[in-house]
Image (cartoon, rainbow, N blue to C red; front, side, top):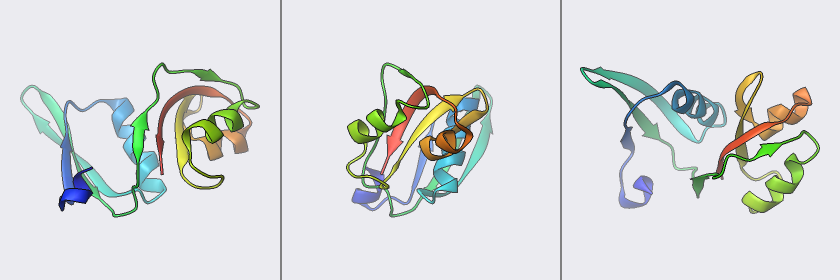
Amino acid sequence: MASRIGENEITIAPASRIIGRVLKVMQDYNYIKSFEVIEEERGGKFSVKLSDTINNCGVIKPRLSVTRSSIGRYESRYLPAQDFGIIILTTTKGVMSHLEARKFGIGGKLLAYIY
């Protein structure tokens, strides 16, 4: 990861709405400090300021559909311990963490994990 080699800012290209929403969830849980969109002639990119709280993160492929009752099974599969880290999923109410999805009582499609 960039923070392991002393980097505190990274660039993600190309920019998309889904990446922006995932970054917003990561910011809400203090995994990143801030991010901004840099507009360019051929699209845009994100400039992300990292915090030192990320141990590991990754994309979940294929994007599995989960029900509200099966989220716990994937939590134990992708996260190292209970209440440690988040799974990010897309739902009918937007991109959110598995904790918010449980609170709303909805399922969705898995996107990524971070701890």
